[in-house]
Length: 309
Image (tube, rainbow, N blue to C red):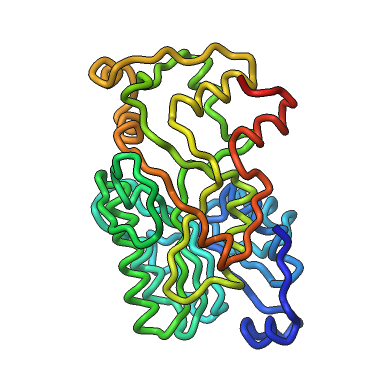
């Protein structure tokens, strides 16, 4: 997706720094954040928050200005308070608890009249019985990870209303890329659900997610939720089979749920307990997104030039 903006409107929306470009702050600049940098660095002076001093050189090489700070340590966030009104929040919640203290610490120092894009998870919906759902679906998280994401969304909504800021929330499913495929799982021969008990899953390529985030920064409506998902319509076992076929690996064995729960981790079992299909019309109609990898099958054919069986 190419990002195009009219210069005058861009200047009015994002303002200008003394060096001629507006600023944008990225919190949680991991794999997706690094893919996002090339889409922003020509338009913005990009500041990227990291907790790892050893990552500063990589961030600089990618065109960002690194800042060492930690959302778990409020005292380290003071320098971010007046840095910019354009924020991309990619940082995950803490690993434990029912609330996202990191997002609470962040909103305590955010400026008024800001623009913020928050990357959440599709797990907030819980199990939908395989239904096709849009962004108006009520959230019903079924595990602590998703509960913390719902908490973060609610905290950000309250902040946006209080500060008169423009907030958009991207609900993201499983992220894949050439280096983010379940090859280790397949090589270990870990089982998948039997076909009659299998669940629908949703996917997005990491590069397409970066493009959706950039589009949301420019085009998202205030207070709007978007499904950052591709066009794939497949069950989890079919996904594993497709990857296995593309890399000439054995397809995983299929087991009934009662037996499989003793063979996989609790985290994987939780993913295998939720079935839903996410509608993605809103990112196309409102954000103007054109997916580079419209389906998992398209991606696998591209990287391996192999027809999927």
